[in-house]
Length: 495
Image 1 (cartoon, rainbow, N blue to C red):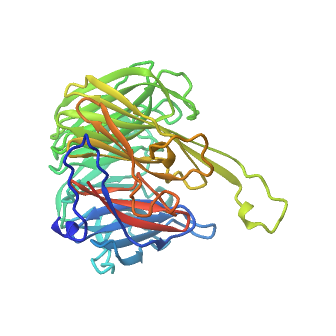
Image 2: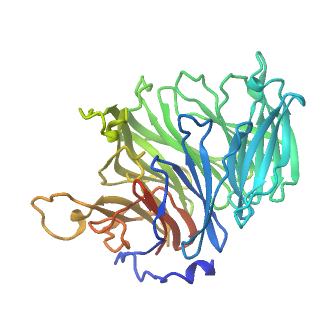
Image 3: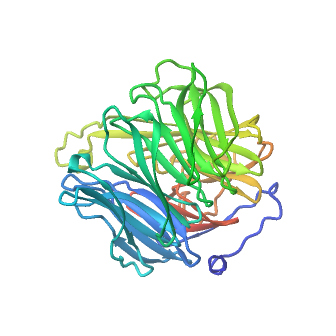
Protein backbone atom coordinates (compact mmCIF):
# COMPACT_ATOMS: atom_id res chain seq x y z
CA UNK A 1 0.00 0.00 0.00
CA UNK A 2 3.02 2.33 0.15
CA UNK A 3 2.51 3.19 -3.51
CA UNK A 4 -0.84 4.76 -2.71
CA UNK A 5 0.53 6.96 0.05
CA UNK A 6 3.37 8.58 -1.92
CA UNK A 7 1.34 10.89 -4.20
CA UNK A 8 -0.99 11.94 -1.41
CA UNK A 9 -0.71 14.41 1.38
CA UNK A 10 -0.91 11.99 4.29
CA UNK A 11 -3.32 13.14 6.96
CA UNK A 12 -3.59 11.94 10.56
CA UNK A 13 -6.43 12.53 12.98
CA UNK A 14 -5.38 13.47 16.50
CA UNK A 15 -8.92 12.95 17.72
CA UNK A 16 -12.26 11.96 16.24
CA UNK A 17 -13.95 14.29 18.67
CA UNK A 18 -12.24 17.26 16.98
CA UNK A 19 -13.60 15.86 13.70
CA UNK A 20 -11.01 17.34 11.35
CA UNK A 21 -11.73 17.16 7.68
CA UNK A 22 -10.27 14.39 5.51
CA UNK A 23 -8.11 15.19 2.48
CA UNK A 24 -9.44 14.76 -1.07
CA UNK A 25 -7.26 14.17 -4.13
CA UNK A 26 -9.19 14.12 -7.42
CA UNK A 27 -8.16 13.31 -10.96
CA UNK A 28 -9.02 15.50 -13.94
CA UNK A 29 -12.49 15.01 -15.42
CA UNK A 30 -12.92 12.25 -18.01
CA UNK A 31 -15.68 12.10 -20.58
CA UNK A 32 -18.40 9.52 -20.06
CA UNK A 33 -21.57 8.51 -21.91
CA UNK A 34 -24.50 10.87 -21.42
CA UNK A 35 -26.66 7.90 -20.44
CA UNK A 36 -26.37 6.70 -16.87
CA UNK A 37 -24.02 3.77 -16.28
CA UNK A 38 -23.54 1.21 -13.55
CA UNK A 39 -20.14 1.71 -11.94
CA UNK A 40 -18.07 -0.65 -9.81
CA UNK A 41 -14.49 -0.31 -8.54
CA UNK A 42 -13.23 -3.87 -8.98
CA UNK A 43 -10.02 -3.87 -6.98
CA UNK A 44 -6.74 -2.19 -6.04
CA UNK A 45 -3.47 -3.94 -6.94
CA UNK A 46 -0.98 -1.72 -5.09
CA UNK A 47 -0.11 0.26 -8.23
CA UNK A 48 -3.62 1.43 -9.16
CA UNK A 49 -7.20 0.27 -9.50
CA UNK A 50 -9.65 -1.13 -12.04
CA UNK A 51 -13.05 0.37 -12.79
CA UNK A 52 -15.95 -1.46 -14.48
CA UNK A 53 -18.71 0.53 -16.18
CA UNK A 54 -21.80 -0.91 -17.80
CA UNK A 55 -23.81 1.19 -20.26
CA UNK A 56 -27.39 0.01 -20.94
CA UNK A 57 -28.00 -1.20 -24.50
CA UNK A 58 -29.24 1.33 -27.04
CA UNK A 59 -32.28 0.64 -29.20
CA UNK A 60 -30.19 -1.08 -31.89
CA UNK A 61 -27.87 -2.95 -29.50
CA UNK A 62 -28.19 -6.53 -28.27
CA UNK A 63 -26.55 -6.19 -24.85
CA UNK A 64 -25.02 -3.72 -22.41
CA UNK A 65 -21.63 -2.21 -23.29
CA UNK A 66 -18.84 -3.07 -20.83
CA UNK A 67 -15.67 -1.04 -20.27
CA UNK A 68 -12.63 -1.60 -18.03
CA UNK A 69 -10.61 1.47 -17.02
CA UNK A 70 -7.33 1.36 -15.13
CA UNK A 71 -6.07 4.30 -13.02
CA UNK A 72 -2.62 4.55 -11.48
CA UNK A 73 -1.81 5.88 -7.99
CA UNK A 74 -1.81 9.45 -9.32
CA UNK A 75 -5.43 8.96 -10.45
CA UNK A 76 -4.32 9.10 -14.09
CA UNK A 77 -6.25 6.86 -16.44
CA UNK A 78 -3.77 4.44 -18.04
CA UNK A 79 -6.22 2.71 -20.39
CA UNK A 80 -9.88 2.20 -21.19
CA UNK A 81 -10.92 -0.94 -23.08
CA UNK A 82 -14.25 -2.13 -24.42
CA UNK A 83 -14.80 -5.72 -23.28
CA UNK A 84 -18.38 -6.14 -24.56
CA UNK A 85 -18.86 -9.79 -25.63
CA UNK A 86 -19.92 -10.50 -29.20
CA UNK A 87 -23.57 -11.38 -29.76
CA UNK A 88 -23.12 -15.16 -29.83
CA UNK A 89 -21.77 -15.13 -26.25
CA UNK A 90 -23.79 -14.69 -23.06
CA UNK A 91 -22.28 -12.24 -20.58
CA UNK A 92 -21.90 -13.93 -17.17
CA UNK A 93 -19.81 -11.65 -14.93
CA UNK A 94 -16.63 -9.64 -14.40
CA UNK A 95 -14.68 -10.63 -11.27
CA UNK A 96 -11.43 -9.50 -9.68
CA UNK A 97 -9.13 -12.51 -9.17
CA UNK A 98 -5.39 -12.56 -8.28
CA UNK A 99 -5.15 -8.76 -8.68
CA UNK A 100 -6.72 -8.39 -12.12
CA UNK A 101 -10.15 -8.49 -13.80
CA UNK A 102 -11.52 -11.47 -15.67
CA UNK A 103 -14.43 -11.43 -18.08
CA UNK A 104 -16.63 -14.54 -17.88
CA UNK A 105 -18.85 -15.51 -20.79
CA UNK A 106 -20.71 -18.62 -21.90
CA UNK A 107 -21.34 -20.05 -25.37
CA UNK A 108 -23.97 -22.60 -26.40
CA UNK A 109 -22.89 -25.23 -28.91
CA UNK A 110 -25.73 -27.06 -30.63
CA UNK A 111 -23.35 -29.60 -32.17
CA UNK A 112 -21.75 -30.50 -28.82
CA UNK A 113 -25.01 -30.19 -26.88
CA UNK A 114 -23.29 -28.08 -24.23
CA UNK A 115 -23.18 -24.61 -22.70
CA UNK A 116 -19.51 -23.77 -22.08
CA UNK A 117 -18.12 -21.25 -19.57
CA UNK A 118 -15.03 -19.23 -20.57
CA UNK A 119 -12.70 -16.88 -18.67
CA UNK A 120 -10.81 -14.06 -20.39
CA UNK A 121 -7.99 -12.23 -18.61
CA UNK A 122 -7.75 -8.45 -18.86
CA UNK A 123 -3.98 -7.92 -18.77
CA UNK A 124 -2.15 -5.03 -17.02
CA UNK A 125 -1.60 -3.30 -20.39
CA UNK A 126 -5.33 -3.45 -21.21
CA UNK A 127 -5.07 -6.26 -23.77
CA UNK A 128 -7.21 -9.38 -23.55
CA UNK A 129 -5.97 -12.89 -23.12
CA UNK A 130 -7.41 -15.78 -25.07
CA UNK A 131 -10.69 -17.21 -23.75
CA UNK A 132 -10.06 -20.30 -21.61
CA UNK A 133 -12.70 -22.99 -21.14
CA UNK A 134 -13.45 -23.59 -17.45
CA UNK A 135 -16.37 -26.02 -17.46
CA UNK A 136 -19.57 -26.92 -19.27
CA UNK A 137 -23.04 -28.35 -18.72
CA UNK A 138 -25.32 -30.35 -20.98
CA UNK A 139 -27.84 -28.31 -22.98
CA UNK A 140 -29.95 -29.66 -25.83
CA UNK A 141 -31.07 -26.33 -27.28
CA UNK A 142 -30.44 -22.59 -27.02
CA UNK A 143 -33.71 -21.86 -25.18
CA UNK A 144 -32.82 -24.35 -22.44
CA UNK A 145 -29.07 -23.80 -22.09
CA UNK A 146 -29.16 -23.06 -18.35
CA UNK A 147 -26.92 -20.44 -16.76
CA UNK A 148 -23.82 -19.99 -14.62
CA UNK A 149 -23.57 -18.16 -11.29
CA UNK A 150 -20.08 -17.05 -10.15
CA UNK A 151 -18.44 -15.62 -7.05
CA UNK A 152 -14.87 -14.75 -6.07
CA UNK A 153 -13.59 -14.85 -2.49
CA UNK A 154 -12.88 -11.44 -0.90
CA UNK A 155 -9.10 -11.98 -1.18
CA UNK A 156 -9.38 -13.05 -4.83
CA UNK A 157 -7.78 -16.44 -4.21
CA UNK A 158 -10.79 -18.63 -5.10
CA UNK A 159 -13.52 -18.82 -7.73
CA UNK A 160 -16.85 -20.58 -7.25
CA UNK A 161 -18.97 -21.64 -10.22
CA UNK A 162 -22.54 -22.92 -9.97
CA UNK A 163 -23.86 -24.50 -13.18
CA UNK A 164 -27.67 -24.37 -13.18
CA UNK A 165 -29.27 -26.54 -15.87
CA UNK A 166 -32.67 -25.73 -17.28
CA UNK A 167 -35.89 -26.53 -15.40
CA UNK A 168 -36.94 -30.19 -15.22
CA UNK A 169 -40.50 -30.98 -14.32
CA UNK A 170 -41.29 -33.09 -11.22
CA UNK A 171 -37.66 -33.21 -10.09
CA UNK A 172 -35.76 -31.57 -7.26
CA UNK A 173 -33.33 -28.85 -8.28
CA UNK A 174 -29.87 -30.23 -9.07
CA UNK A 175 -26.83 -28.00 -9.61
CA UNK A 176 -23.13 -28.53 -10.21
CA UNK A 177 -20.69 -26.70 -7.90
CA UNK A 178 -17.02 -26.27 -8.79
CA UNK A 179 -14.26 -24.59 -6.78
CA UNK A 180 -11.14 -23.21 -8.49
CA UNK A 181 -7.97 -21.63 -7.12
CA UNK A 182 -6.62 -18.31 -8.45
CA UNK A 183 -4.84 -20.19 -11.24
CA UNK A 184 -8.21 -21.68 -12.28
CA UNK A 185 -7.16 -25.17 -11.25
CA UNK A 186 -10.13 -27.18 -10.03
CA UNK A 187 -10.05 -27.96 -6.30
CA UNK A 188 -13.27 -29.95 -6.19
CA UNK A 189 -16.39 -30.57 -8.26
CA UNK A 190 -19.73 -31.89 -7.05
CA UNK A 191 -23.40 -32.20 -8.01
CA UNK A 192 -25.83 -31.32 -5.24
CA UNK A 193 -29.58 -31.98 -5.09
CA UNK A 194 -31.60 -29.39 -3.15
CA UNK A 195 -34.64 -30.31 -1.04
CA UNK A 196 -36.91 -28.13 -3.21
CA UNK A 197 -38.72 -28.93 -6.42
CA UNK A 198 -37.32 -27.31 -9.54
CA UNK A 199 -38.89 -23.97 -10.50
CA UNK A 200 -38.88 -22.30 -13.90
CA UNK A 201 -37.41 -19.14 -12.36
CA UNK A 202 -34.64 -20.30 -10.01
CA UNK A 203 -33.23 -17.63 -7.67
CA UNK A 204 -29.78 -18.52 -6.31
CA UNK A 205 -26.99 -16.12 -5.27
CA UNK A 206 -23.60 -17.67 -4.53
CA UNK A 207 -20.77 -16.49 -2.24
CA UNK A 208 -17.47 -17.94 -1.06
CA UNK A 209 -15.19 -16.87 1.79
CA UNK A 210 -11.39 -16.88 1.87
CA UNK A 211 -11.41 -20.31 3.56
CA UNK A 212 -13.29 -21.85 0.62
CA UNK A 213 -16.67 -22.34 2.30
CA UNK A 214 -19.60 -21.87 -0.09
CA UNK A 215 -22.78 -20.05 0.87
CA UNK A 216 -25.89 -20.01 -1.35
CA UNK A 217 -28.70 -17.56 -0.66
CA UNK A 218 -31.75 -19.24 -2.18
CA UNK A 219 -35.28 -17.94 -2.58
CA UNK A 220 -37.48 -20.91 -1.81
CA UNK A 221 -40.98 -19.35 -1.86
CA UNK A 222 -43.18 -18.98 -4.92
CA UNK A 223 -42.40 -15.98 -7.14
CA UNK A 224 -45.75 -14.20 -6.67
CA UNK A 225 -45.83 -14.50 -2.89
CA UNK A 226 -43.92 -12.99 0.01
CA UNK A 227 -40.20 -13.89 -0.31
CA UNK A 228 -38.94 -16.90 1.68
CA UNK A 229 -35.21 -17.58 1.83
CA UNK A 230 -32.72 -20.18 2.99
CA UNK A 231 -28.93 -20.12 3.23
CA UNK A 232 -27.15 -23.30 2.15
CA UNK A 233 -23.54 -23.88 3.16
CA UNK A 234 -21.15 -26.34 1.51
CA UNK A 235 -17.61 -27.12 2.68
CA UNK A 236 -16.75 -29.49 -0.16
CA UNK A 237 -18.44 -32.42 1.56
CA UNK A 238 -21.77 -31.61 3.22
CA UNK A 239 -24.67 -29.39 2.13
CA UNK A 240 -26.48 -27.74 5.06
CA UNK A 241 -29.59 -25.56 5.13
CA UNK A 242 -30.33 -22.61 7.42
CA UNK A 243 -33.88 -21.34 6.93
CA UNK A 244 -34.46 -17.59 7.31
CA UNK A 245 -37.50 -17.56 9.57
CA UNK A 246 -38.89 -14.20 10.66
CA UNK A 247 -42.31 -15.44 11.82
CA UNK A 248 -45.66 -16.13 10.19
CA UNK A 249 -46.87 -12.50 9.97
CA UNK A 250 -43.49 -10.96 9.18
CA UNK A 251 -42.75 -10.59 5.48
CA UNK A 252 -39.20 -9.98 4.24
CA UNK A 253 -38.86 -6.63 2.46
CA UNK A 254 -35.12 -6.64 1.77
CA UNK A 255 -32.20 -8.97 2.19
CA UNK A 256 -28.44 -8.51 1.95
CA UNK A 257 -25.28 -10.34 2.98
CA UNK A 258 -21.63 -9.80 3.93
CA UNK A 259 -18.56 -11.63 5.19
CA UNK A 260 -16.84 -10.70 8.43
CA UNK A 261 -13.03 -10.50 8.53
CA UNK A 262 -12.84 -14.09 9.82
CA UNK A 263 -15.19 -15.44 7.13
CA UNK A 264 -18.48 -15.63 9.03
CA UNK A 265 -21.50 -15.14 6.74
CA UNK A 266 -24.19 -12.66 7.77
CA UNK A 267 -27.62 -12.28 6.19
CA UNK A 268 -29.82 -9.40 7.27
CA UNK A 269 -32.65 -7.13 6.22
CA UNK A 270 -35.94 -5.56 7.19
CA UNK A 271 -39.41 -7.03 7.51
CA UNK A 272 -42.96 -5.72 7.37
CA UNK A 273 -46.16 -6.84 9.04
CA UNK A 274 -48.27 -5.25 6.31
CA UNK A 275 -50.37 -7.75 4.38
CA UNK A 276 -49.91 -6.41 0.85
CA UNK A 277 -46.27 -5.90 -0.15
CA UNK A 278 -46.69 -5.97 -3.93
CA UNK A 279 -46.28 -2.17 -4.11
CA UNK A 280 -42.91 -1.02 -2.82
CA UNK A 281 -43.49 2.73 -2.40
CA UNK A 282 -44.63 3.68 1.08
CA UNK A 283 -44.33 0.24 2.64
CA UNK A 284 -43.60 0.40 6.37
CA UNK A 285 -40.75 -1.59 7.92
CA UNK A 286 -41.56 -2.89 11.40
CA UNK A 287 -38.26 -4.49 12.34
CA UNK A 288 -35.02 -6.16 11.30
CA UNK A 289 -33.63 -9.67 11.23
CA UNK A 290 -29.99 -10.84 11.38
CA UNK A 291 -28.51 -14.31 10.86
CA UNK A 292 -24.83 -15.10 11.37
CA UNK A 293 -23.30 -18.43 10.28
CA UNK A 294 -19.77 -19.46 11.25
CA UNK A 295 -16.98 -19.45 8.65
CA UNK A 296 -17.00 -23.24 8.24
CA UNK A 297 -20.73 -23.24 7.44
CA UNK A 298 -21.35 -25.82 10.14
CA UNK A 299 -23.38 -23.88 12.71
CA UNK A 300 -25.63 -20.88 13.20
CA UNK A 301 -23.94 -18.45 15.59
CA UNK A 302 -27.19 -16.58 16.21
CA UNK A 303 -30.47 -15.55 14.62
CA UNK A 304 -32.41 -12.53 15.81
CA UNK A 305 -35.66 -10.83 14.83
CA UNK A 306 -36.06 -7.41 16.44
CA UNK A 307 -38.98 -5.00 16.07
CA UNK A 308 -38.50 -1.25 15.96
CA UNK A 309 -40.67 1.82 15.69
CA UNK A 310 -42.25 1.93 12.23
CA UNK A 311 -40.14 3.36 9.39
CA UNK A 312 -41.14 3.71 5.75
CA UNK A 313 -39.30 2.94 2.50
CA UNK A 314 -36.25 1.60 4.32
CA UNK A 315 -33.61 -0.09 2.16
CA UNK A 316 -30.60 -1.98 3.54
CA UNK A 317 -27.41 -0.56 2.01
CA UNK A 318 -24.55 -2.27 3.84
CA UNK A 319 -23.58 -4.61 6.70
CA UNK A 320 -20.58 -3.64 8.83
CA UNK A 321 -18.68 -5.66 11.44
CA UNK A 322 -17.08 -4.01 14.45
CA UNK A 323 -15.33 -6.41 16.82
CA UNK A 324 -18.12 -8.88 17.73
CA UNK A 325 -20.93 -6.49 16.77
CA UNK A 326 -22.92 -6.21 13.53
CA UNK A 327 -24.22 -2.88 12.24
CA UNK A 328 -26.91 -2.52 9.57
CA UNK A 329 -26.71 0.64 7.47
CA UNK A 330 -30.05 1.53 5.89
CA UNK A 331 -31.53 4.43 3.95
CA UNK A 332 -35.04 5.76 3.45
CA UNK A 333 -35.08 5.58 -0.33
CA UNK A 334 -37.63 5.47 -3.13
CA UNK A 335 -38.09 6.52 -6.74
CA UNK A 336 -41.09 7.81 -8.66
CA UNK A 337 -41.78 8.50 -12.33
CA UNK A 338 -44.25 10.49 -14.34
CA UNK A 339 -44.75 11.90 -17.81
CA UNK A 340 -42.51 14.77 -18.82
CA UNK A 341 -44.29 18.05 -19.44
CA UNK A 342 -44.02 18.54 -23.20
CA UNK A 343 -42.54 21.65 -24.73
CA UNK A 344 -44.84 22.97 -27.51
CA UNK A 345 -41.74 23.48 -29.66
CA UNK A 346 -41.29 20.16 -31.53
CA UNK A 347 -37.61 20.97 -32.18
CA UNK A 348 -36.71 21.07 -28.49
CA UNK A 349 -34.86 17.75 -28.22
CA UNK A 350 -34.57 17.98 -24.43
CA UNK A 351 -38.23 16.96 -24.10
CA UNK A 352 -37.88 13.70 -26.02
CA UNK A 353 -37.66 11.77 -22.73
CA UNK A 354 -40.92 9.93 -22.07
CA UNK A 355 -40.49 9.59 -18.30
CA UNK A 356 -39.48 12.09 -15.65
CA UNK A 357 -37.77 10.06 -12.90
CA UNK A 358 -37.27 11.46 -9.41
CA UNK A 359 -35.09 9.79 -6.75
CA UNK A 360 -35.42 10.41 -3.03
CA UNK A 361 -32.71 9.59 -0.47
CA UNK A 362 -33.83 10.54 3.01
CA UNK A 363 -32.67 9.61 6.52
CA UNK A 364 -29.81 7.17 7.18
CA UNK A 365 -30.40 4.51 9.84
CA UNK A 366 -27.76 2.55 11.77
CA UNK A 367 -28.88 -0.49 13.79
CA UNK A 368 -26.28 -2.17 15.99
CA UNK A 369 -26.39 -5.70 17.44
CA UNK A 370 -24.09 -7.55 19.84
CA UNK A 371 -22.55 -11.02 19.43
CA UNK A 372 -25.86 -12.69 20.32
CA UNK A 373 -28.04 -10.54 18.08
CA UNK A 374 -29.36 -8.34 20.88
CA UNK A 375 -30.06 -4.77 19.68
CA UNK A 376 -27.59 -2.22 21.04
CA UNK A 377 -28.84 0.96 19.40
CA UNK A 378 -30.69 2.51 16.48
CA UNK A 379 -29.33 5.83 15.30
CA UNK A 380 -30.68 8.09 12.57
CA UNK A 381 -28.86 10.76 10.59
CA UNK A 382 -31.05 13.38 8.95
CA UNK A 383 -30.56 13.67 5.21
CA UNK A 384 -32.90 15.00 2.54
CA UNK A 385 -31.68 14.48 -1.02
CA UNK A 386 -33.68 14.56 -4.23
CA UNK A 387 -32.50 14.28 -7.83
CA UNK A 388 -34.07 13.96 -11.27
CA UNK A 389 -33.23 11.76 -14.24
CA UNK A 390 -29.75 10.80 -13.02
CA UNK A 391 -30.41 7.26 -11.78
CA UNK A 392 -30.12 8.57 -8.21
CA UNK A 393 -26.33 8.70 -8.36
CA UNK A 394 -25.98 11.50 -5.82
CA UNK A 395 -28.64 10.74 -3.23
CA UNK A 396 -27.14 7.75 -1.43
CA UNK A 397 -24.11 7.65 0.91
CA UNK A 398 -20.67 6.26 1.74
CA UNK A 399 -20.50 4.19 4.93
CA UNK A 400 -17.36 2.54 6.31
CA UNK A 401 -15.40 1.81 9.48
CA UNK A 402 -12.36 4.07 9.83
CA UNK A 403 -10.14 4.00 12.92
CA UNK A 404 -12.87 2.29 14.94
CA UNK A 405 -15.59 4.81 14.06
CA UNK A 406 -18.35 4.61 11.46
CA UNK A 407 -17.85 7.33 8.88
CA UNK A 408 -20.86 8.32 6.78
CA UNK A 409 -20.47 10.71 3.82
CA UNK A 410 -23.36 12.09 1.75
CA UNK A 411 -24.34 15.17 -0.26
CA UNK A 412 -26.34 17.96 1.38
CA UNK A 413 -26.91 21.71 1.10
CA UNK A 414 -23.84 23.63 2.21
CA UNK A 415 -25.67 26.48 3.94
CA UNK A 416 -26.73 24.09 6.72
CA UNK A 417 -23.12 23.67 7.81
CA UNK A 418 -21.43 27.05 7.29
CA UNK A 419 -22.24 28.31 10.80
CA UNK A 420 -24.19 31.31 9.53
CA UNK A 421 -27.82 32.23 10.08
CA UNK A 422 -29.86 32.15 6.89
CA UNK A 423 -33.33 33.60 6.40
CA UNK A 424 -33.51 32.43 2.80
CA UNK A 425 -31.03 30.91 0.37
CA UNK A 426 -31.48 31.52 -3.36
CA UNK A 427 -30.00 28.67 -5.44
CA UNK A 428 -28.39 26.61 -2.63
CA UNK A 429 -25.47 24.38 -3.57
CA UNK A 430 -24.61 20.89 -2.31
CA UNK A 431 -21.36 19.78 -0.71
CA UNK A 432 -20.08 16.50 0.73
CA UNK A 433 -21.07 16.15 4.39
CA UNK A 434 -19.56 13.72 6.90
CA UNK A 435 -20.96 12.24 10.11
CA UNK A 436 -19.00 10.26 12.73
CA UNK A 437 -20.81 7.55 14.70
CA UNK A 438 -19.39 5.52 17.59
CA UNK A 439 -19.63 1.92 16.37
CA UNK A 440 -19.93 0.53 19.91
CA UNK A 441 -22.63 2.83 21.30
CA UNK A 442 -24.23 4.28 18.17
CA UNK A 443 -23.72 7.82 19.45
CA UNK A 444 -23.59 10.48 16.74
CA UNK A 445 -20.29 12.25 17.52
CA UNK A 446 -20.37 15.09 15.03
CA UNK A 447 -21.51 16.14 11.56
CA UNK A 448 -19.44 18.56 9.49
CA UNK A 449 -19.64 20.04 6.01
CA UNK A 450 -16.64 19.27 3.80
CA UNK A 451 -16.10 22.62 2.14
CA UNK A 452 -12.52 21.77 1.12
CA UNK A 453 -13.34 18.85 -1.15
CA UNK A 454 -11.07 20.00 -3.97
CA UNK A 455 -13.65 21.34 -6.43
CA UNK A 456 -16.38 18.76 -5.86
CA UNK A 457 -19.61 20.29 -4.60
CA UNK A 458 -20.25 23.88 -3.60
CA UNK A 459 -20.76 26.94 -5.80
CA UNK A 460 -17.39 26.57 -7.50
CA UNK A 461 -17.69 22.82 -8.02
CA UNK A 462 -19.31 21.39 -11.13
CA UNK A 463 -19.61 17.82 -9.81
CA UNK A 464 -21.13 15.96 -6.88
CA UNK A 465 -19.78 12.91 -5.10
CA UNK A 466 -21.30 9.63 -6.15
CA UNK A 467 -21.00 8.44 -2.56
CA UNK A 468 -22.11 4.82 -2.93
CA UNK A 469 -19.22 4.09 -5.35
CA UNK A 470 -16.07 3.51 -3.26
CA UNK A 471 -13.42 0.91 -2.45
CA UNK A 472 -11.16 0.51 0.58
CA UNK A 473 -7.47 0.73 -0.38
CA UNK A 474 -6.15 0.51 3.17
CA UNK A 475 -7.23 1.45 6.69
CA UNK A 476 -7.31 5.20 6.07
CA UNK A 477 -7.60 5.56 2.27
CA UNK A 478 -10.63 5.00 0.05
CA UNK A 479 -11.01 5.29 -3.71
CA UNK A 480 -14.04 7.47 -4.53
CA UNK A 481 -15.91 9.00 -7.48
CA UNK A 482 -17.63 12.25 -8.43
CA UNK A 483 -19.62 13.02 -11.58
CA UNK A 484 -22.07 15.20 -13.43
CA UNK A 485 -24.08 14.43 -16.56
CA UNK A 486 -21.13 14.48 -18.97
CA UNK A 487 -17.94 13.95 -16.95
CA UNK A 488 -16.53 12.21 -13.91
CA UNK A 489 -13.55 12.28 -11.58
CA UNK A 490 -11.91 9.50 -9.66
CA UNK A 491 -10.25 10.35 -6.37
CA UNK A 492 -8.74 9.28 -3.07
CA UNK A 493 -10.05 10.34 0.32
CA UNK A 494 -7.45 10.20 3.11
CA UNK A 495 -8.47 10.10 6.75
